Amino acid sequence: MTTTFLTAAELDELLGPGAADWPGLGLTVVRGTPAEPESLSEVTVRKGEEIVGFTEQSTAYKGLRIYQALITTGHRGVPFPAGFLPPDPLRARHNERLRWLPEDHPDRPAEGTVRQNAHIEA
Image 1: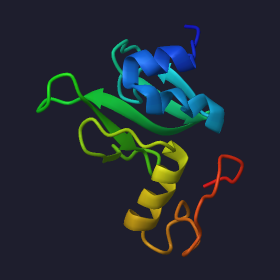
Image 2 (image 1 turned 180 degrees about the horizontal axis):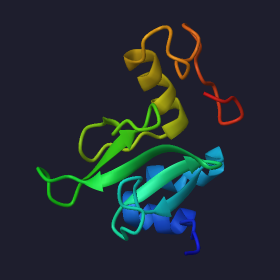
Image 3 (image 1 turned 45 degrees about the horizontal axis):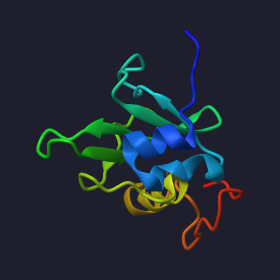
Image 4 (image 1 turned 135 degrees about the vertical axis):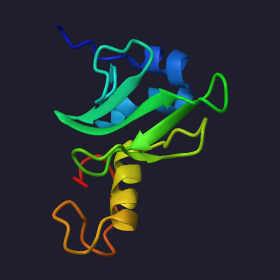
């Protein structure tokens, strides 16, 4: 199977104008989720090969998606409110790692660090 990255125009149409900026942050977006890689209706956000987050359809709010920040491998994700897409998925993941991961967890960023832009790894 060949991976096809969604363009800014496709992201704008599928998720809205905020997501159209994601490729400019160094992110790639592909159809499918970690649990369902073949799904055409969902999208996964990646920084290189690393999955940063994904969307899924909201069951409570028809037509809206739920963005989930993936904070660790094997974790389902931290959901955001239906219809809200973070303008910077890397910052969203960084902040959720600070919020949820214990201090001794290897994926937890240093306390007090703030990801300023896409060139700084979270």
